[in-house]
Image (tube, rainbow over all chains, first blue to last red; front, side, top):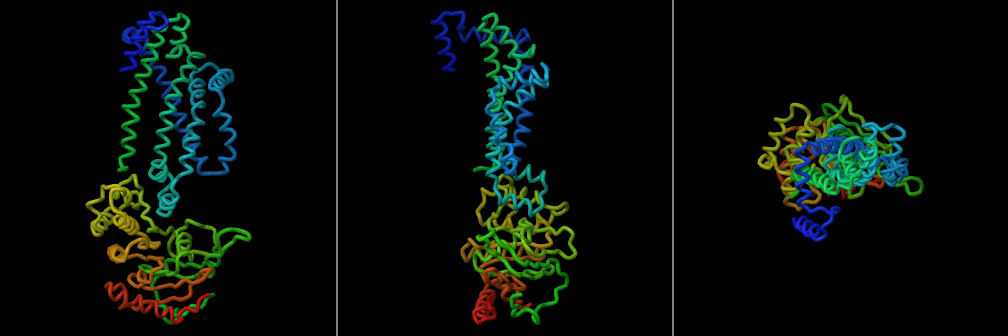
Length: 235
Length: 257
């Protein structure tokens, strides 16, 4: 709230077309939402975010677990992981587009590949710290692989998974915009490129604000309730 | 083979042997650092029989249990289960090892074979845990958590219950309570049990037969059967029995390794 006020005052003082006031941006957001353009582009982008996020989290968690549990695998993959971790997002996206074409699956996978290594590295830390006593308990009571994963392993990884999910969502939606800007004809990234050509800062900020609202809603409506649920057992 | 003193003649005819242990050698480390822990250690266990393995701390008792539980396969020798294709084990570790993020009931339910829910419920009632079934392990006392671990071990309809110093960190009064609870669970669901402990009182209060370990490397230095009329009596007679066991061991019933 304080931030919005500061923005409003600064923008009014500057009086420039390149720094619209907060009220103008909010009004534009409402206008664009009413016209349907904003919701369409936002929806498309969110779908891409969701798909990339799901792929990066599932595969990243599986990889991280395997690396944390099996040392030889960790040794074999470590340098690959570091290469992928430090590969600029833009390079990966461009290469993927060049090799596999400007299509939807390539876009989604390119984004997922950008996030996957950091998820794997985070989960690997958690997997290295798994409680051996509980694993032995599960083994001697013959809990089975799936039950052990669900009831013994994953609960221990919850803090790591939440950290990876939060950081992941933040980075993924930024990268999705780049992917859209470079090779898609819809979505928030595409829209922002269009308004960039027109120097329409008001619309650019309106789209950004809309997305920030969505991310905030996910934090409050999804991560925090999930986290409360996962932490019920802690006193 | 190490000398088996009181064994032989005194050995009882047990109806059905469910476990045969014949460990030739078990050690840790390799090369110069290799350290043998168990050697030429053999015994068998009958159905519904409680056997106590007694030895000083660090003599390899926990290692022995881990071998039997199948948690460590790196040893020379054989551990076989006559007549059991896939023996079901209940294990009571030194710490309760309950899943902190699951309730007491869930901790039991997760390992129960199908159809054992009623028996598990009865055990929780009998051990005074039923009112706490929906509590998380962090919300109950350590004593209750240990009780829950004992309930879990007996609830799975085990062929054998393995107990690793379950009362080691308790004071005398609570250890006595722990033994009473263990007996209560065993009477509710009789099963073969192998109890490793450093405390002869545990053995005297619970066992049909006591194996004394000596080493290193540890082997069975003496096998002492407990007369049927002396088994699992009240606390006072258990104390007396423990004293006489201690005297018998001191007098040289064991010749050591």
